[in-house]
Length: 352
Image 1: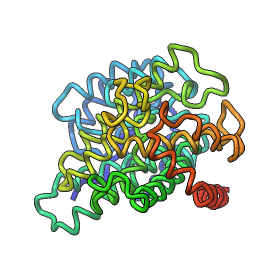
Image 2: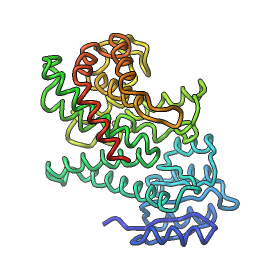
Image 3: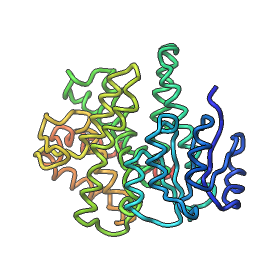
Image 4: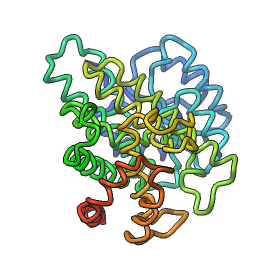
């Protein structure tokens, strides 16, 4: 059994004591310097290393680089705590492989919840690594669990995004049923593919967990540079899913999840991103995801805009047929608009 050890790098004893109350069941070990951290980390196995950037005399980025470079410590997940927003440091930390970057100004329960999400996520990965010893039914359970863990991490970063993925998954299911009833894309819409689309839909925005909070939660319009950074979530998300789920048995779920994450911002007329694909060059699952994604964004209140009425949003969807969206999917979407609105209202009420 994997040891339940957590290493906390922090010179503030009060922080350690507070976290200890929320991390019951774990053996907590402490360090206050770079040298002490490296020594302790190499002595036993840890589920997690928590680093407080405010620790006096500590070069956090250099410490992370050192941890990720050494064979004994490179696979240990790392969470960084900071008392302010520094997008450059945050971006660099994620580049180095940090699992989460948490603002100390958040509530203690939020901080501990996000820490425990990382622990749970890493446990899922370890269990998946043992897939050869699992029965097929167990592997399918793990597929669902890892997707739920991913979705939980997204919701921990941005509540609006977490609610968004639940609603868009519902829209995807409705649209797929509508396409089948209309007789469209029947060669592609096999039972397994339809199920894979619904299962994978919650992962389409997973790449956003690597985008800085200063961009993800900005109350105004993004600058050009910020928008370019935001666009990277599509490629990053596809890569994350491919690397994480590659050991799982169902290659259809994997390929569908990768396609949804990578291509859901492509447009029918070729003006989307990241690859400017057009028409049926865009995977069907991503074309379905695109319309669900945009509709929900339009009718949802975000930090940078108010919610749009269903009527106005549907007019935009209709007008974008043949430009942003696959015309056949728009046709089905409009035919099922009452069901989609009902699903939206019900899920918004649940989240309230």
